[in-house]
Image (cartoon, rainbow, N blue to C red; front, top):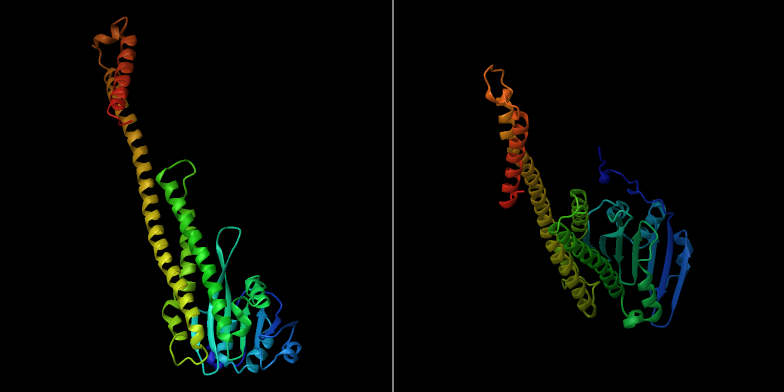
Length: 345
């Protein structure tokens, strides 16, 4: 039975990653950048600056004490910390007095062409951004490069712009996943429309169905919740950054629309597979029926001549046996060519 987290002060990481918890600090301003790594909060605290944007990356959530210390330093409430440590928590966006919380899922492909979800949390305050990931990843490499090169004058902007860049990267990842899925489903449809020995089976279609459900579960909650970052009462999202969040929302809508198309295509593929299966079964039954039809008159003749009557003229005829064979061969061959002419076989 699951425990009531409101009745416990303990923090537990709910997940499978065993990545050791470690911290990366990137403190940047229009003038300079300072980066430092550490295993505990005390290792990076001296390098944090009030006049700069402090981006702290926390990789690995197994050490709940470090996660708690970081969150306590920035006055993040206890329930939010519990949500961060729960890798099975649903995607959500929350607005608090001094920070915004965005809880997402990052999907990584494995060798079996399936996707593994990873907890990804962003906490954005006035001059800080905290990112929590279960594992080490190269997801932030492009953002780090942009900060180093001051792309779009990112170092001159507020923390809300950094969060918009992260959300855009997440949307770009989902766009890549869903576009790839759409292309693969179209290839699957072509293979099903031209059945061969290598036609896809139900397992392959079910794999795409599982991927679709995972992507839908990861992205769909944002459809209703993303507006929380837009309303004018959110003081942490400045007016200058709202166009960038609007762009993120456009990407989100594209992913959702493409996702609906994939759902319809998967449903059509299942119907097409069942139709092909029924057609194949009908062809088999037709062939068996034709074979049975050919042998029915032969069985009739064999049954007549197999009766034990004393007076049967054919039994005493010298060519009776040869005549029987010729009659049955001609009858069977005639029926076969008749079915071929009718294109029933």
